[in-house]
Image 1 (spheres, rainbow over the protein chains, first blue to last red):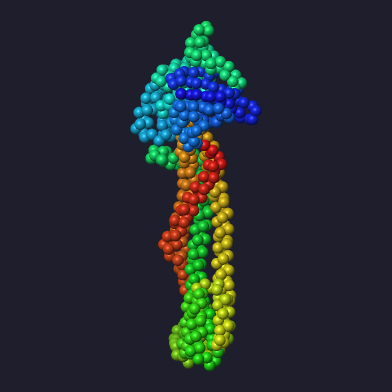
Image 2 (image 1 turned 180 degrees about the vertical axis):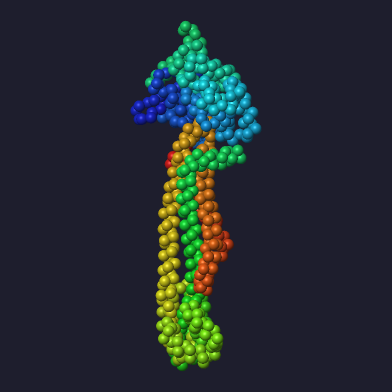
Length: 228
Length: 343
């Protein structure tokens, strides 16, 4: 599903943000990518979204090498990758329904289809009753749920979550993680970038640890449990 | 592009304008000023061209022949003149006809002078009304022409003297008044030609004035077009800044470059379109009213100048102005998108 082969990225020549990274993430996996600030986590996400191109190496998404994808094909690639961020990135002047529907509108879906899909997604994230609320009327956890609904409404095969619990309290953080787990159980490949080690330990999933642009460990599901 | 995406782009374009009301208004106002001036100059230049055309048709050069020139020689000269590309028309006027025409002119001039005197002195007008005389015979008109000689312009007095000697001539009308000089030089070189009367000043003035109006209007319009493009560009830049977050989200969720850019293009087009339609309405209303006003208040002008009908002017002006407005709007938004919206 996601494959990186000897991928390096240098923003400035001679200063690598990622060094010779090779990762293989299978369909339906739930993977945590952890590491300190500056470890290359965000660069990793940007490379997968083709916001950046690697300096060397090749990235495959759904068996397609990203370096062969033309500029005009990038939107199609991104429709297969849902993404959520720490700061939610919701449109503040639009309500919950409109925020989720926005993802469908930009790919040109018709209103009837949008209504069905958005209702379904809002039910999944538990916000069907709050579809008319604007972001400022929602808690952090609720806003992140809206962001997840928006990321999933186009039915992507991959969901990338960049620090999804970074702005949330403990209870909300756990609710979001449970939701991501449920989404993974429905078949979506989930990649969560985080530095919340408590959650990582309890969730007991595959963990890729990065440090200064290099993978220092890649523990399979159950390894942490066995360590404990 | 799907219908829903098209509607989305139009909707967002209108929303952009609404969000940046002040900037949009400034852009529309500048665009309106630009198109208004363009329309104004277009109308002036067109009407002036019409007048120049009328004048050109009336500006003739007169070719007189040497004493004793035979009819055959005169015909030969006529043929040579007619062959010239700048010649629109070449009419032969016999001695008798020339004298008759001049007599008519003198009658008209006398009538005009009398009317002007009437206005100044109503008593005199009453007396003259009681003794109206019509001078239409050849002898009378020639006599009167001689009497009035001192009051006439130099050119007319020369014609009188020519008429008294050997007044048969060709009246040559030009396609383009600016070609007068070369034709006069050519005709003067022909055998049997005694004299060529022409008005250098009219030709020069008409050509120079036409050019001047063209240059001034082009200069002003170019400056205003520049200002309009700059303001539209600023409006779109502000729109992009306001929607930066939304654009980033659109990119991440797989919106195409075109869909991201389209609302800003729509915004530019709408500003251009509104900026063109408003001054066109104003010009349409004003043109009719100004012509009516001039016709009523300055009725004397009616005999000298003729205005192009409003329908004729706007048949060309409307599509040109709308295309210009939309084109500037499109150009302004496109260059801004290229600069500030690298998708």
